[in-house]
Image 1 (cartoon, rainbow, N blue to C red):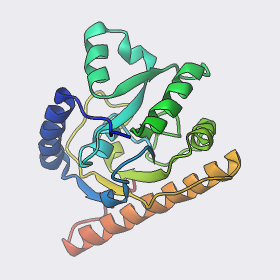
Image 2 (cartoon, helix red, strand yellow):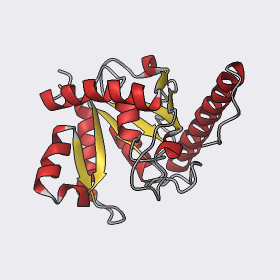
Image 3 (cartoon, one colour):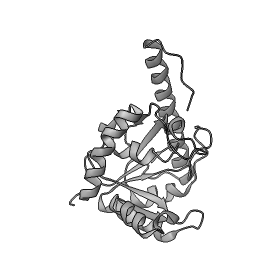
Image 4 (tube, rainbow, N blue to C red):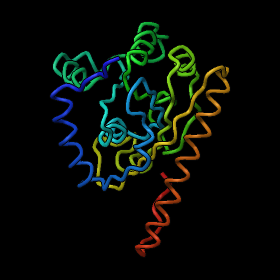
Length: 221
């Protein structure tokens, strides 16, 4: 099966974002090699801020598709723009069957899809209880999951802030997880443990890095 290609706009934005994320946020990424080189993949990440889609996708060789709340597509110009960046709409809290079917179809077509199982941005930087809807997608699509933890983007752009500010951001991809034959609650539990473990790893690495540089410890998020 041929792999989905990135649009020209996606490629241009990725180049600019790569530079911007490095300069403004000192972005460091670990474990990107865990993302399979071909075939459908579901990237499940914690959700700290509006920066997260860029954090997840900017260092990957493969283009990444995203779910976004349907309201973002209502302004025509912005809706066109984010569609070119592989976003497609979902109605939050409305049981959007169409979006779920499209998600499963895209995964079976070989897309790399980024989903935030918390459902919304965290209010405090910690991982909130995961919603179970993604487990149905996992069971029906039959593709590997790659858990992704993000640390620091909450400090850079808290939920109640209108704009971001410079602050270090770290991303870590875990090994692919295969969930064949598992029940939805087992899938949710395993992903939850993986995300918490990766986030804890990033925070330990951040403390060690700052200690080696003789800096004070940074806040946990």
